Image 1 (cartoon, rainbow, N blue to C red):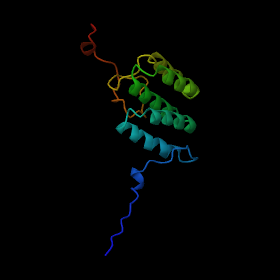
Image 2 (cartoon, rainbow, N blue to C red):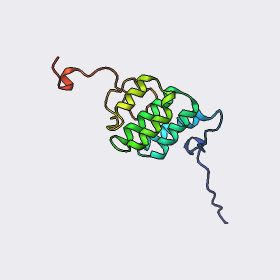
Image 3 (cartoon, helix red, strand yellow):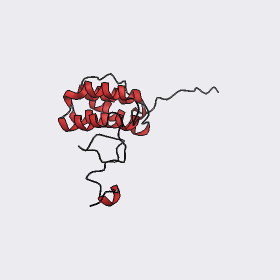
Image 4 (cartoon, helix red, strand yellow):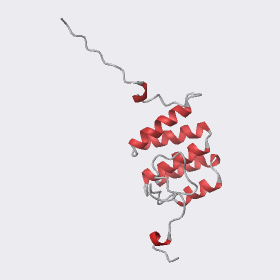
Length: 141
């Protein structure tokens, strides 16, 4: 008796979608990329795709979250890429978001720092909100 081997296709949740910004499916593509980048934060092509898809979606929160994650992933590196994607996305961001990212262009961001305004769509930020206490920051009260 001969056994036929078949390669099963993975469940849809485990397959990478064709990320071409299909009309009506941009949010699903963004959600997939967010989860992918949470597991693979060094995937710079994925970060760039996410910023582009967020721009096409027109969502200010999605664009800001995508850029924050890129700034965390690159830290003090990739100033040219950060600058290019920030300038392409600047019109979709509000002044507070633009100022925060412009301020951290050279240094990047850290996942464990307080980022203002809070990036709700960031998957790499630890989500700290508020101001550090003087005791923790080393400043006098």
